[in-house]
Length: 115
Length: 115
Image (tube, rainbow over all chains, first blue to last red; front, side):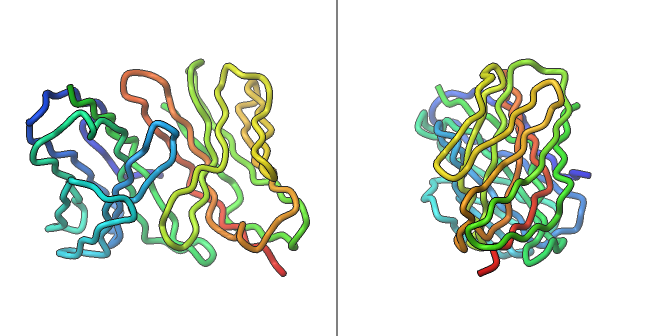
């Protein structure tokens, strides 16, 4: 059922490089999210979007930026990667109701390692 | 391919009672983690409990415990002495331990604790 895709799944790059993590969903969801996972396995919300041209920062401060030019696409960009950016990044989208909540669909994640 | 199934879209429980949320998964991997995450309306994702596949002993965190049946590929979450603050969406997740640390999430169970 999951129609949300993240690429690449694994990325190893050097310090100072600009990178973009891609996230696309084919479900027509308005809401999309980026989570960062710390080594303790907690997921922290770093960005979210409630629709085209709408982006907000989440609970965890992040040097990354996002854009939402199209409904289906929510890329995350790091202008100058540093080792402290090494983490797992998970993209999600929501749009269908399940009880009081909207069903959340997750991508498989991108494991970023900055050397 | 890995899949995670949560067959209970919505559940409710009386305050102070016990409730069990079901999760099954399908994989041919031997090295993996299983997680339960709680998502309140704020969109945060709170790690409730995790289980390493090679450990036979069921994980326990205060009022939360799991019943991990590796052969049956089942990973249920038991919440004892339910509290109003337990009302949330609960996601079961599987993480394949390889170079990409790929995540697979269930579609969630909406739990309501009734006063």
